[in-house]
Image (tube, rainbow, N blue to C red):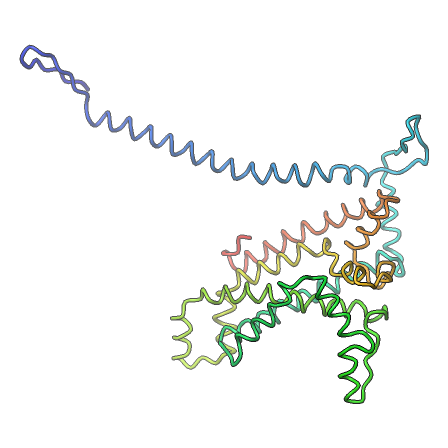
Length: 335
Protein backbone atom coordinates (compact mmCIF):
# COMPACT_ATOMS: atom_id res chain seq x y z
CA UNK A 1 0.00 0.00 0.00
CA UNK A 2 1.35 3.47 -0.97
CA UNK A 3 0.28 6.94 0.17
CA UNK A 4 1.07 10.14 -1.86
CA UNK A 5 0.90 13.68 -0.46
CA UNK A 6 1.47 17.14 -1.97
CA UNK A 7 3.29 19.19 0.64
CA UNK A 8 4.44 22.65 -0.45
CA UNK A 9 4.47 21.62 -4.03
CA UNK A 10 6.55 18.55 -3.29
CA UNK A 11 5.13 15.09 -3.82
CA UNK A 12 6.07 12.52 -1.18
CA UNK A 13 5.44 8.79 -1.25
CA UNK A 14 5.44 6.36 1.70
CA UNK A 15 5.16 2.60 1.64
CA UNK A 16 3.21 0.80 4.26
CA UNK A 17 5.46 0.12 7.22
CA UNK A 18 3.80 -3.26 7.84
CA UNK A 19 4.53 -4.45 4.29
CA UNK A 20 8.16 -3.32 4.53
CA UNK A 21 8.72 -5.06 7.84
CA UNK A 22 7.02 -8.19 6.55
CA UNK A 23 9.39 -8.35 3.59
CA UNK A 24 12.41 -7.94 5.84
CA UNK A 25 11.18 -10.67 8.20
CA UNK A 26 10.68 -13.10 5.32
CA UNK A 27 14.19 -12.33 4.06
CA UNK A 28 15.72 -12.97 7.51
CA UNK A 29 13.75 -16.22 7.88
CA UNK A 30 15.02 -17.43 4.51
CA UNK A 31 18.60 -16.53 5.49
CA UNK A 32 18.27 -18.36 8.82
CA UNK A 33 16.79 -21.45 7.15
CA UNK A 34 19.57 -21.45 4.55
CA UNK A 35 22.25 -21.25 7.27
CA UNK A 36 20.61 -24.10 9.17
CA UNK A 37 20.50 -26.31 6.07
CA UNK A 38 24.11 -25.50 5.21
CA UNK A 39 25.19 -26.31 8.77
CA UNK A 40 23.23 -29.57 8.78
CA UNK A 41 24.63 -30.73 5.42
CA UNK A 42 28.10 -29.64 6.47
CA UNK A 43 27.90 -31.74 9.63
CA UNK A 44 26.87 -34.73 7.50
CA UNK A 45 29.41 -34.19 4.74
CA UNK A 46 32.46 -33.77 6.99
CA UNK A 47 32.30 -37.24 8.62
CA UNK A 48 31.23 -38.72 5.27
CA UNK A 49 34.30 -37.28 3.54
CA UNK A 50 36.48 -38.43 6.41
CA UNK A 51 35.01 -41.93 6.14
CA UNK A 52 35.56 -42.08 2.38
CA UNK A 53 39.16 -40.82 2.52
CA UNK A 54 40.50 -42.50 5.65
CA UNK A 55 38.52 -45.73 5.57
CA UNK A 56 37.05 -46.62 2.19
CA UNK A 57 39.80 -45.24 -0.04
CA UNK A 58 42.72 -46.38 2.13
CA UNK A 59 41.21 -49.80 2.83
CA UNK A 60 39.81 -50.34 -0.67
CA UNK A 61 42.86 -52.37 -1.62
CA UNK A 62 42.39 -54.64 1.41
CA UNK A 63 38.73 -55.15 0.55
CA UNK A 64 39.63 -56.10 -3.04
CA UNK A 65 42.39 -58.44 -1.85
CA UNK A 66 39.97 -60.27 0.44
CA UNK A 67 38.00 -61.46 -2.59
CA UNK A 68 41.01 -62.46 -4.68
CA UNK A 69 42.88 -65.75 -4.97
CA UNK A 70 46.33 -66.20 -6.42
CA UNK A 71 46.62 -68.27 -9.60
CA UNK A 72 50.38 -68.65 -9.01
CA UNK A 73 50.92 -67.23 -12.46
CA UNK A 74 52.63 -64.02 -13.54
CA UNK A 75 52.06 -61.74 -16.52
CA UNK A 76 54.71 -60.35 -18.84
CA UNK A 77 55.34 -57.43 -16.45
CA UNK A 78 56.16 -59.79 -13.60
CA UNK A 79 52.96 -59.06 -11.64
CA UNK A 80 51.14 -61.92 -10.00
CA UNK A 81 47.76 -62.79 -11.53
CA UNK A 82 44.74 -63.05 -9.24
CA UNK A 83 41.18 -64.20 -9.83
CA UNK A 84 37.98 -63.29 -8.02
CA UNK A 85 37.15 -65.93 -5.44
CA UNK A 86 35.71 -66.62 -1.98
CA UNK A 87 38.60 -68.95 -1.24
CA UNK A 88 40.01 -66.84 1.60
CA UNK A 89 36.70 -66.87 3.46
CA UNK A 90 36.17 -70.62 2.97
CA UNK A 91 39.73 -71.17 4.18
CA UNK A 92 38.96 -69.09 7.28
CA UNK A 93 35.78 -71.07 8.12
CA UNK A 94 37.64 -74.34 7.59
CA UNK A 95 40.37 -73.24 10.00
CA UNK A 96 37.73 -71.98 12.41
CA UNK A 97 36.31 -75.49 12.67
CA UNK A 98 39.66 -76.76 13.97
CA UNK A 99 39.89 -76.17 17.78
CA UNK A 100 43.70 -76.34 17.64
CA UNK A 101 44.11 -73.70 14.93
CA UNK A 102 45.81 -70.36 15.48
CA UNK A 103 42.59 -68.49 14.61
CA UNK A 104 40.59 -70.24 17.34
CA UNK A 105 43.35 -69.64 19.87
CA UNK A 106 43.57 -65.97 18.85
CA UNK A 107 39.81 -65.57 19.19
CA UNK A 108 39.90 -67.19 22.62
CA UNK A 109 42.61 -64.77 23.77
CA UNK A 110 40.72 -61.83 22.26
CA UNK A 111 37.68 -62.72 24.36
CA UNK A 112 39.90 -62.98 27.43
CA UNK A 113 41.13 -59.42 26.88
CA UNK A 114 37.57 -58.25 26.29
CA UNK A 115 36.30 -59.96 29.46
CA UNK A 116 39.07 -58.31 31.46
CA UNK A 117 38.01 -54.94 30.03
CA UNK A 118 34.38 -55.55 31.01
CA UNK A 119 35.42 -56.52 34.57
CA UNK A 120 37.58 -53.40 34.79
CA UNK A 121 34.58 -51.09 34.21
CA UNK A 122 32.69 -51.81 37.48
CA UNK A 123 35.98 -52.22 39.37
CA UNK A 124 37.17 -48.80 38.24
CA UNK A 125 33.78 -47.29 39.00
CA UNK A 126 33.75 -48.57 42.59
CA UNK A 127 37.25 -47.26 43.23
CA UNK A 128 36.29 -43.91 41.67
CA UNK A 129 33.24 -43.71 43.94
CA UNK A 130 35.27 -44.17 47.12
CA UNK A 131 37.81 -41.62 45.94
CA UNK A 132 34.90 -39.28 45.22
CA UNK A 133 33.78 -39.78 48.83
CA UNK A 134 37.27 -38.56 49.84
CA UNK A 135 38.37 -41.53 51.89
CA UNK A 136 41.61 -41.26 53.85
CA UNK A 137 44.55 -40.77 51.50
CA UNK A 138 42.33 -40.33 48.42
CA UNK A 139 44.71 -37.80 46.81
CA UNK A 140 47.63 -40.23 47.04
CA UNK A 141 45.52 -43.10 45.69
CA UNK A 142 44.37 -40.94 42.80
CA UNK A 143 47.97 -40.17 41.80
CA UNK A 144 49.05 -43.81 42.14
CA UNK A 145 46.15 -45.08 40.02
CA UNK A 146 46.59 -42.45 37.30
CA UNK A 147 50.40 -42.49 37.16
CA UNK A 148 50.69 -45.54 34.82
CA UNK A 149 48.50 -43.75 32.27
CA UNK A 150 50.98 -40.90 31.79
CA UNK A 151 54.27 -42.82 32.03
CA UNK A 152 55.92 -44.17 28.87
CA UNK A 153 54.47 -47.57 27.92
CA UNK A 154 57.92 -48.97 27.10
CA UNK A 155 59.20 -47.96 30.53
CA UNK A 156 56.15 -49.51 32.18
CA UNK A 157 56.59 -52.83 30.35
CA UNK A 158 60.30 -52.98 31.22
CA UNK A 159 59.57 -52.22 34.88
CA UNK A 160 56.73 -54.74 34.96
CA UNK A 161 58.89 -57.52 33.51
CA UNK A 162 61.71 -56.79 35.95
CA UNK A 163 59.19 -56.86 38.79
CA UNK A 164 57.52 -60.18 38.01
CA UNK A 165 60.33 -62.16 36.38
CA UNK A 166 61.88 -65.15 38.13
CA UNK A 167 64.36 -63.76 40.66
CA UNK A 168 62.78 -60.30 40.50
CA UNK A 169 61.36 -58.17 43.29
CA UNK A 170 58.01 -59.98 43.44
CA UNK A 171 59.73 -63.37 43.45
CA UNK A 172 61.91 -62.22 46.35
CA UNK A 173 58.91 -61.05 48.39
CA UNK A 174 57.08 -64.34 47.81
CA UNK A 175 60.24 -66.19 48.88
CA UNK A 176 60.23 -64.35 52.21
CA UNK A 177 56.98 -66.13 53.04
CA UNK A 178 58.31 -69.51 51.97
CA UNK A 179 56.60 -69.52 48.58
CA UNK A 180 57.85 -69.78 45.01
CA UNK A 181 56.70 -67.48 42.24
CA UNK A 182 56.00 -69.43 39.04
CA UNK A 183 57.25 -68.31 35.65
CA UNK A 184 54.72 -65.72 34.49
CA UNK A 185 56.13 -64.51 31.16
CA UNK A 186 57.79 -67.46 29.44
CA UNK A 187 55.13 -70.00 30.44
CA UNK A 188 52.47 -69.91 27.65
CA UNK A 189 49.71 -70.99 30.05
CA UNK A 190 50.30 -67.90 32.24
CA UNK A 191 51.52 -65.30 29.75
CA UNK A 192 48.08 -64.09 28.63
CA UNK A 193 46.92 -63.61 32.22
CA UNK A 194 50.12 -61.72 33.02
CA UNK A 195 49.65 -59.38 30.06
CA UNK A 196 45.97 -58.86 30.95
CA UNK A 197 47.00 -57.87 34.49
CA UNK A 198 49.36 -55.32 32.96
CA UNK A 199 46.55 -53.99 30.74
CA UNK A 200 44.27 -53.49 33.74
CA UNK A 201 47.03 -51.82 35.73
CA UNK A 202 47.87 -49.32 32.98
CA UNK A 203 44.30 -48.65 31.85
CA UNK A 204 42.81 -48.17 35.30
CA UNK A 205 43.61 -44.46 35.58
CA UNK A 206 41.89 -43.30 32.38
CA UNK A 207 38.49 -44.73 33.28
CA UNK A 208 38.90 -43.53 36.84
CA UNK A 209 39.36 -39.92 35.70
CA UNK A 210 36.30 -40.18 33.42
CA UNK A 211 34.10 -41.51 36.22
CA UNK A 212 35.33 -39.02 38.79
CA UNK A 213 34.72 -36.17 36.36
CA UNK A 214 31.16 -37.41 35.83
CA UNK A 215 30.59 -37.82 39.58
CA UNK A 216 31.76 -34.27 40.23
CA UNK A 217 28.88 -33.02 38.06
CA UNK A 218 26.25 -34.71 40.22
CA UNK A 219 24.32 -31.95 42.06
CA UNK A 220 25.54 -31.91 45.70
CA UNK A 221 21.98 -31.18 46.85
CA UNK A 222 20.98 -34.71 45.86
CA UNK A 223 23.81 -36.27 47.86
CA UNK A 224 23.03 -34.06 50.88
CA UNK A 225 19.35 -35.00 50.72
CA UNK A 226 20.30 -38.67 50.67
CA UNK A 227 22.48 -38.18 53.76
CA UNK A 228 19.67 -36.43 55.61
CA UNK A 229 17.34 -39.32 54.80
CA UNK A 230 19.89 -41.76 56.22
CA UNK A 231 20.75 -43.35 52.88
CA UNK A 232 23.66 -45.83 53.29
CA UNK A 233 26.63 -45.62 50.91
CA UNK A 234 25.71 -48.73 48.91
CA UNK A 235 22.19 -47.45 48.29
CA UNK A 236 23.55 -44.06 47.29
CA UNK A 237 25.91 -45.81 44.89
CA UNK A 238 23.31 -47.99 43.17
CA UNK A 239 20.23 -45.76 43.24
CA UNK A 240 21.74 -42.31 42.81
CA UNK A 241 25.28 -42.36 41.49
CA UNK A 242 25.06 -45.10 38.85
CA UNK A 243 21.85 -43.76 37.19
CA UNK A 244 23.22 -40.21 37.06
CA UNK A 245 26.64 -41.29 35.74
CA UNK A 246 25.22 -43.96 33.40
CA UNK A 247 25.91 -41.98 30.16
CA UNK A 248 29.64 -42.02 30.99
CA UNK A 249 29.58 -45.71 31.96
CA UNK A 250 27.78 -46.64 28.74
CA UNK A 251 30.26 -44.61 26.69
CA UNK A 252 33.22 -46.54 28.14
CA UNK A 253 31.42 -49.82 27.45
CA UNK A 254 30.66 -48.86 23.85
CA UNK A 255 34.31 -47.88 23.34
CA UNK A 256 35.26 -51.25 24.78
CA UNK A 257 33.06 -53.03 22.24
CA UNK A 258 34.51 -50.99 19.37
CA UNK A 259 38.00 -52.23 20.27
CA UNK A 260 36.91 -55.88 20.54
CA UNK A 261 38.64 -57.05 17.34
CA UNK A 262 41.07 -54.21 16.60
CA UNK A 263 43.19 -54.11 19.75
CA UNK A 264 46.51 -55.91 19.81
CA UNK A 265 46.99 -55.34 23.50
CA UNK A 266 50.51 -54.74 24.81
CA UNK A 267 51.81 -57.98 23.23
CA UNK A 268 54.07 -56.08 20.84
CA UNK A 269 55.45 -54.00 23.71
CA UNK A 270 56.37 -57.16 25.60
CA UNK A 271 58.00 -58.58 22.47
CA UNK A 272 60.00 -55.39 21.93
CA UNK A 273 61.08 -55.54 25.58
CA UNK A 274 63.00 -58.74 24.97
CA UNK A 275 60.27 -61.36 24.79
CA UNK A 276 60.43 -62.13 21.05
CA UNK A 277 59.08 -65.64 21.65
CA UNK A 278 55.66 -64.09 22.21
CA UNK A 279 55.43 -63.23 18.51
CA UNK A 280 55.24 -66.90 17.53
CA UNK A 281 53.19 -68.14 20.48
CA UNK A 282 49.63 -68.96 19.45
CA UNK A 283 48.60 -69.19 23.12
CA UNK A 284 49.24 -65.46 23.48
CA UNK A 285 48.21 -63.88 20.17
CA UNK A 286 44.90 -62.10 19.50
CA UNK A 287 42.94 -61.63 16.27
CA UNK A 288 44.27 -58.12 15.69
CA UNK A 289 47.84 -59.10 16.55
CA UNK A 290 47.69 -62.15 14.27
CA UNK A 291 46.50 -59.97 11.37
CA UNK A 292 49.30 -57.51 12.16
CA UNK A 293 51.91 -60.29 12.05
CA UNK A 294 50.61 -61.69 8.76
CA UNK A 295 50.51 -58.24 7.18
CA UNK A 296 53.99 -57.43 8.41
CA UNK A 297 55.38 -60.65 6.89
CA UNK A 298 54.23 -59.55 3.43
CA UNK A 299 53.28 -63.11 2.47
CA UNK A 300 49.75 -64.31 1.63
CA UNK A 301 48.16 -60.92 2.38
CA UNK A 302 44.80 -61.91 0.91
CA UNK A 303 44.02 -64.21 3.82
CA UNK A 304 44.45 -61.68 6.69
CA UNK A 305 42.58 -59.12 4.58
CA UNK A 306 39.59 -61.49 4.39
CA UNK A 307 39.71 -62.13 8.14
CA UNK A 308 39.85 -58.40 8.83
CA UNK A 309 36.80 -57.81 6.62
CA UNK A 310 34.90 -60.62 8.35
CA UNK A 311 35.49 -59.35 11.88
CA UNK A 312 34.71 -55.79 10.83
CA UNK A 313 31.37 -57.00 9.45
CA UNK A 314 30.73 -58.79 12.75
CA UNK A 315 31.77 -56.00 15.11
CA UNK A 316 29.82 -53.13 13.50
CA UNK A 317 26.33 -54.66 14.10
CA UNK A 318 27.38 -55.61 17.64
CA UNK A 319 28.35 -52.01 18.43
CA UNK A 320 25.11 -50.61 16.99
CA UNK A 321 23.07 -53.19 18.90
CA UNK A 322 24.82 -52.36 22.19
CA UNK A 323 24.26 -48.67 21.56
CA UNK A 324 20.58 -49.33 20.88
CA UNK A 325 20.26 -51.31 24.14
CA UNK A 326 21.95 -48.54 26.14
CA UNK A 327 19.72 -45.94 24.50
CA UNK A 328 16.66 -47.94 25.57
CA UNK A 329 17.98 -48.03 29.13
CA UNK A 330 18.68 -44.30 29.13
CA UNK A 331 17.59 -42.05 26.20
CA UNK A 332 20.32 -39.56 27.17
CA UNK A 333 22.92 -42.00 25.81
CA UNK A 334 23.54 -40.50 22.37
CA UNK A 335 27.08 -41.75 21.72
